[in-house]
Length: 280
Image (tube, rainbow, N blue to C red; front, side):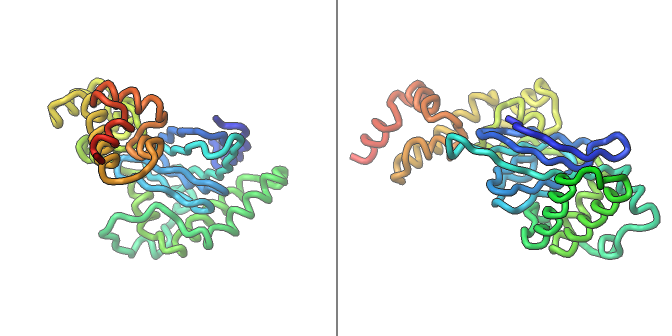
């Protein structure tokens, strides 16, 4: 749940926003023709996309390229709020800001490996502090200042050794990415994502995703994903002493009680009985 939201707009588009989120929370971030920089102050989520499944740390940021993404925060305390700062990177704005040329390092750097999405918190902390100042004094904001803040962010990301991330992001703003269903499913088989969400990560309609899924895995999405999660859960019950609730979360169930019901229905015994029998 978004508890509060403040925004700065540039030429009719929201460019920078500050939000407070109540947990548990799953944010669907869809960027068809733009990139996005998101900084998390106290707690950070797990980032799920077509090619990423990573836990971000607090006071760090993610740089999201074009495509569909999900940011998931689990609840840890009864009254928990998470603050995030978001900067949208629109291609038309970048084209305007860099009408003559991109920063030289972007134009000449060669990137062969997949870039990291997590950005160094030391480098960006001052930048986030400056945005906080302007949210406290919004009358100071105008288009010229917003343009400077976007340029500042790009240069800070370059200096934080995320040159390849910036280069890939800008390239993605002008190209459509193709996504393989098998790659996405294999990456997120233990994530708490439904069929609709997996389809979005693959840039497919629900019906097209189901057809392609069945062709690749020879099974329906719900049946296959549930079996994969339960197989992993059985392995963890046999070889670890992890609490059952922790196992449930770890294999992609957001409700341990629902996990127990599904486990008993499919396996025939509750997780605790199954563990006891295998241990003995």
